[in-house]
Structures are given as C-alpha cells and as structure tokens.
Length: 167
Image 1 (cartoon, rainbow, N blue to C red):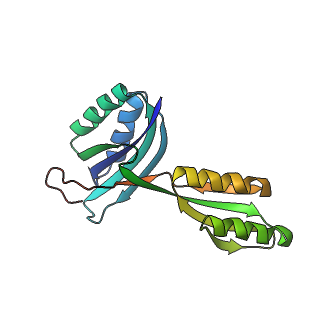
Image 2 (cartoon, rainbow, N blue to C red):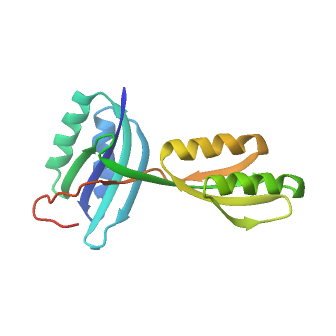
C-alpha cells in the first residue's frame, strides 16, 4: 500500500466534500488526512487528502472523482512534484525546570510558543510530515497533554493550467 496525496479543485458548494469523501470510501480507501479550504477565488475550494492504496485502485478513484459535476481538477501529487505542509498545535507539560529545554527544541524546529501557563506551554509548528513527526518524537518525553494536527496541504511545484482555470 502506497501513500498518495490527492489535490481536488471543486466548486465551493454545499455537499461537495461529502461526495468526494464518499468516492474515496466507496473505493475502499481510508483517508489519513483531509484538509479543505477556499482558494483565492471564493467560487472554488481545494481539497487535499492523503490516502493509502495501490496505484490501480487510485487511478480508478481519480477517474470517478473527475466525473463528479462539481469537481474541476483532480491531481495525484507524486513524491518530489509538490510541496506539502502541516500545522500542529500541542500542549506540553512544562514546569520551570523543563521550559528552557522545550524552548531549545522549539528553536531547532522553528516552532513558536503561543501560550504559557505555570504548568504547560502550547506550541505551534509547521512542516512536512517527517519534520512534524521528528518534532513530536523529541517532545514526547516531556509529556504531551494534547495535540491537534491539520493534515497536509499541498501545492504542485510546477503549476500547469487545467481546463482554462487559473485557481
């Protein structure tokens, strides 16, 4: 099973996300991450999904997605052909004795401390999946109290026009 990052440009309409997600589940794909947001043109949204599956199943799923009326473009973003980032917020146990070590780790990963209390800190960090995982591995021993991840957002490195859209 290979991990795939799929970018889907859709009309920004009610129910489109349900139909797109249903297409993945109907084809037997479990969605690892799902991120949806508007583009610079509010008529359109971009859905970024990471899924695991074989190439043949995925090709069939992409063809079926392309047949949905509200779908304008579907891309299977291949390794090396796109830039992906994820945002993670985490709350870490951090008394005064631990805080300086946590700050040093945050500096190494270019993370920001966005909230401080006497017993914890909330940290924000962005990066690719490997960087996020390495950051979490470094902070695990300090006691992660809570964690939220956005899932990947991705953009092709070289933009090509599709169906006359510049979105």
